[in-house]
Image (cartoon, rainbow, N blue to C red; front, side, top):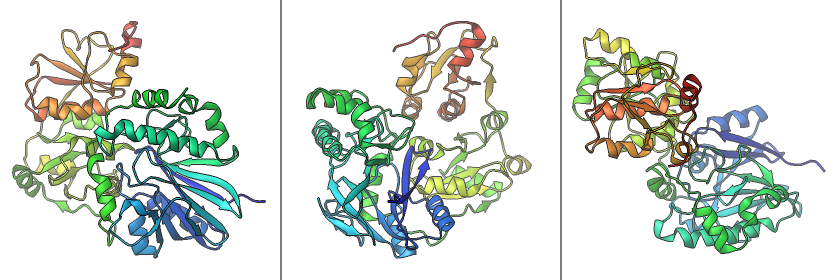
Length: 456
């Protein structure tokens, strides 16, 4: 018996995976697709498939769902939990409900914990369970966090997560596990780099399924939780109401430098998406450096005010569509345009620029300077420069607005991108003697032949 074709569509930037299931009749099921449907469209076109069903396992906090867009553009039937009280047309499912996909079936299992209304979807071929879309319940080597719904309910939901994981673990060992959240997702505790698994493998290797009892499970899960971006607190409600539909692909309007300057003077924020070295060499005063890469959306949503109009400055070879789609999938629809001609257009208009100093890990430029490490806390405790101070990048926007020591400061992270974002935040807050380390702690240790410190 041939297995159904299930195509994982990973979003490495957000650490998530959507899935496209070939229903073998020219139609497809899509599970947990984001508003950025480019990968879904490409995978469907490659196989000649039309999306007939769009299922969401839960009200996502880390991205806007693409299910409503698929319903509008493809006439897809939206499948989701009835308990989610979504305010747009959908088929509301409860525990044990099944949907006939045309040969295959999808069975809903209530699996609360990550969210109250969370469902897992078991894919059945005849009566045989083939795999389960676990969303934010059972993940590879872990489970999703339980502190996003309400901080006061974190332990309550962790106990629900315990029961949900054990319910899923009762499925046959050969059932595939297709989670949404994975490595790199701030919705999950640290997890394996692999994005799919099986029930048998998780029973054998997932530490949470080996917890001695419910109390031990709760302590283990809650002890692994770290920080998360502030947009997580608003996207679930947007997904419940229904993300705004996009009539066409978003575009960046070109704005003459003088017009862009007027908008900035009126309160808009400029986001410079160029690589670190180019931003360092010359940039618009007060602009934020968020280099365009896979994790652009996360840092855009973490350090940029959601309500403020945003302008973009990019290199000519950087894809404006990538900027816009990454922004759109976390609900940033306020990108009003880009600086025409980039930094060259800005300087040609006679407008001011400033620069940020880069320092090499093997140079003498760091002597006598305070070192600010803006990596996540677990990264910092695993190994950092002696005497370095840790303030996570996500917390720096608030910290930068308060009085900080005025001595010269070298900012660092793992490679330089987060450090330059941090330096631009500090410069925006009025700190002038700020430089950025090229590379990370391992580069510094190798250059100086000195061991890193560990712990807090």
